[in-house]
Structures are given as structure tokens and as C-alpha cells.
Image (cartoon, rainbow, N blue to C red; front, side, top):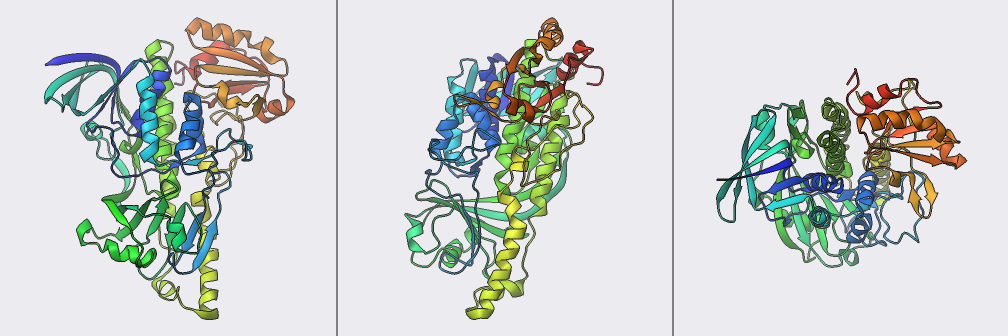
Length: 545
């Protein structure tokens, strides 16, 4: 039996595991990813890459690849609610901050250098896989099944099986990160409890191919079609490539039904229309849950993505929240392995990310219930003035209650680490919590604001490799204490003067310390009296860490 060593062993080659491998590799940290599959995606899942995830992709140099791989730039991001493609339109929700492949023709956003994109996992995962494979410190082991682990003297000894030759191997790792999905054996081995509702409903996803569907009806192109009618099952039709690939969602309620027992063809005819040729490529049953793990770490073992949070697909939050986990872990693992991260730095992972996941799970759960009763649905196709009035009421209610599901900048960009043991609070009140609206702020714990610096560069582009101290209005001369304190601890710190008054106003303080993940760690208008205490706190070695 052979034995290998790696600083970080990542279990699972989905988007979260790939993102963590890529981020560690981008930081020059050696890691090994094991995945029992061959990397092929046979059934599409995640479809939304929100603006925060696009900022991470920008950092890694693949934002344009993701943009190009998504829906064509002229394909609308519209959400349509209909009785059927051949029936009545009920409501239309536009998403002006989404999409756009030609950056010269679209309006720049005030809050981010990147727009949210619709890039299905069919295309997103291969981009992330190629990114990770380009990193010389990343080892990718496909067709390699993780079979178990034990902890020995603060390390992890994992057992894996190379499926190509059925050879069992041992991999010794300083840290193990489980990005292996909702059925994670690592989570089960740790005895982690999932808080929430284990079953909200059972579903089928149907992967379809049909050519130029928009020419078969009069509703126009849209990213999502949601159907409200007496057929039930809350069916939805989601565009995957802006051409011929679609995913039909079918809600089976609380009854677990075998896929072959569901009249998929009948539902397709009811919502798309009879006589329209559709090739069913695959059918995947899944269970909608609303759960968050009570623990995200035990010693050298950590969990991320679906292994610690699961919810319905509304809003497209799942993959994006998981990538947020990966980015938070990436810099903390790197700092710890490089020796400048404090003993409590990795403890802050759960403290910071669990509330973010809980907020997302709660938000999705709040909007899963039915809006209309059976009597309303039975009359939704009624012709004439009475039916028109009913559909108008239904449409208004959909817009009122569902807009926040699809326009959610407050979720994508507005999450904050507050409180956090590695963030220095300045005592200012938090901004109003909003799902749909995002107001930039440099309040500690928040994402550092975006502002254009000229030449196509954003303040967001300054962050990533280490800590950055932004100095406004000539405050760079006051940064010497923090520079010396960081140097004495081996902490990476770059002082960046910015003279632009508008950016200074946006950042609200003369000195703003930003973490490698782009979140504000500390701010003030003058140099701190005890710079070493600030540095020790933000690197996880302070008295309160």
C-alpha cells in the first residue's frame, strides 16, 4: 500500500472543491483533490454565477471565460410566469444587473466590476477544473474514491482507492476539507448534526434538448419560465445554453415517487405544448431540504458547500454560497500553513460562514410555500374579462412576493462577518439588512466597496494575495506602525495610497485594512495606538480570537 503526503486534501471535485483547489494553488499552497468520478457532468444543476463569485473568478483570471461560456450576451435574463408557453403570461421580472458578454456595450455597475452571469455547471465546472489543473501546486486525482480517514497527532490519514487499478492508498494530510456534497461520509463520521427540515419536498429535474423553443410560442426568450396552472407540480423551465438545452423542474410534493412513475411527457405537453419535439437526456430525482450543520470543523477536518448547508434552488444561492466557503477557507489555510496565521484563525471559519449560510437557507425557506390556492389555479386559464382580472391579481402578487428571489444583490454582495473574532469592530451600527438592495460600506466585516481606479481596474482587484491597507488623503505616512507590526508577525501586508476623493468618501475612513478575501478587517481615521493588537486580532492570534 503506497502512502503520499499533502498539506491539504480536498474531497470532492464539484465547484466548491475545484474553487478551493484553485484558490490554494493561486496562493502557491500544495493540495490534492480526490474525486471518484471522471469530471464529466451528466446532469446540469447550478446555473447562476452571481456577481460576488464572478469577482472571485476575476481574481483567478477566468471571469471572461465564464462570461463567454454562459448564455449569449443578447439572451435576456428575464423571469416569466405563465400558465403555459401556449397560454397566458402572468408576470415578468427583469434583472438588469445580470448577463452581458460584450463589456463595451453594457452599462458598468456601481457596486461591482462584474455582472452576475448565467453559466451552467456544464460549462462552469470545466473552467474551474482547467484553472486548478494549471496550478503547479495542485494535484488532481480523478477516478479516486475517498473511503475513510483517521486522525493521528493532529494530522489526517485518509484511505482512498484508485478506481483505475483498484489500488488502495493512504494520503497523509495536515488538513482535510470535505466538499463532497449532501451525503458526505466525512460529515457523518464527525457526528455533525444538521439543523432544520430534512425533507421539504421531493422533485425531479429533467434535462431536455429542444431546438429554438422560442419560435414555438409568443412569449419571447427568457432565462426562466415558471408555470402556474391547474396541472400542479409547480413546473419550471430553465435555459442552460441560450440555444437548445433546458432543465424542467417538477415538484412531487411530499410523496416520494419513482421517476418512471411520473408522466414526464404529459407534463412537458401541458407546459411547453403538444407536438413540440423534446429529447429527454436524463432525469434526476432530488430532495429539497432546509438545513445547516451545527459544526463545520473538528480539529484538522473541515466541511464546506452542500456538506454543511442545503436548500432549494430558488435564487441560485447554493453554489455561490459554497464558493464563498471555499474563498474564506483558502486564505485561512494558506496563512496557517505559511506560519503567520494565528492558532485561532481556522476557528473563525465556522464563526463567519455559518451565519451567512443560515441567512441564505432561511431566505429560501421563507419563499417555498404556495402562493395560490386550488380554486385560483383552477380558474387561471378562464377566458374573458373575469379571467383577465384574476390573472392580473395573480401577476401582481407574484411580482410582490417573488422579486426578491431573483433580484438579490443584498444576498450576493451584502453578507458580512459580524460579529467575528478576527474583525475589529468600530462600534458603528450595521446597515439595514436587505435581500434585494446592496449599499456599499466599509464597516468592518463587510465586503470592501468597489470603485473604479482607471484603466479598467477596480478596488476589488487590489485584494487577494495578502492584507491591504488602503490609505486615503495622505494617510500612508500613518501606516508605519501597522506595517512594522505585520512584518514582525510575518503577515503579508501592502499599503496602497489612493488619492481619489470619491473613493475616499466611499470608504468613509482614512485607513481601511482589507483581508485577503476582500472583507474589511479594521478601519479608522488615525493610526491605532496598539498596531500589534490589531495585527494579532485580524490574523487569529488576538486575545479574543
